[in-house]
Amino acid sequence: MQESNMVPVTILTGFLGSGKTTLLNRILKEDHGERIAVIENEFGEVGVDNDIIETGNEQIVEMNNGCICCTVRGDLIRILGSLKEKRDHGALKFDRVVIETTGMADPGPVAQTFFTDEEIGNYYLLDSIITLVDAKHAPKQLDEFHEAQEQVGFADKILLSKTDVAPQDETEKLVQRLRKMNPRAPIKKVHFGDAPIKEVLDIRGFNLNAILELDPQFLTDIAHEHHDEVESFVFRADKPFDGQKLEQFLSGMIQVYGPDLLRYKGVLWMKGNPRRVVFQGVHMMMGGDLGKPWGKGEKKGSVMVFIGKKLPQDIFIAGMEECLAK
Image (cartoon, one colour):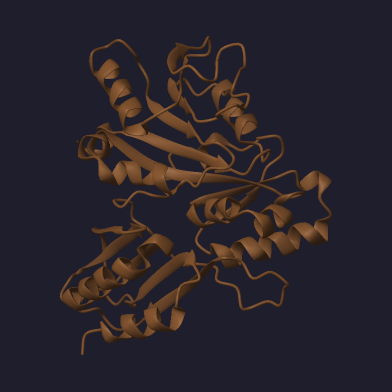
């Protein structure tokens, strides 16, 4: 399906109490004129509206704001397939999908759904993973729960909530910590889910076809007491890659480290290719697409960000350097 005809999907994730449902309600109340299908994955928690969503029964209900809500128990592929079928047959009308994950969820398997099933991947466009982070409680949550760290690692955008009740110096430390964990996700402070719609929907943070200008704001090392399981590093090169060598190297690395590789993404200069190659992967799935052409006289180079759990940075960097064209 042409990208312009695909149904965009936004995944809202974040630890318990970070403000996901508040943001979702904000999106649903906004006068944007679109019909949104919402998939709720809040087992045993109160979802968008406890009177409308009965957790425990899988159902599709229509809300009075033009939103269709599907509570999930079971296979996401099946739910998305059911929504597709109803939309194609005119039984349901919706323009986009928002998936709200449970607070204890690792968003990885949700994101992988759009890679693993061809029919789903060709019909739905995974737009972005938006992660809500509670400024008051996040430092402790990040210390204690690997799910909270993975939610940060997977984010295309981080929305920082409850900054009004957290000390400013602690919030600044938290922002530095988040940037070390995931340098490619912009961080924005929000108050009670008050984020402009254009900063949450259609940001194409995940899309391989987007023309990406990847310039991670990678901080110099700062001394702090946390050793987070999720860490990141950046590879940069001003020489072109040998495409075959790079593919062989990365294929080998994901066989060994795939489960610990949350996200890897970059804009690459490939030998003999007049255009940028936009490359990214999730765990053991990776792919590339052509970005915009290199400009005449433009300085070419490659930038690749790796985000994962205790990755051997020296092995990755040395191996990437070996893949540069001689």
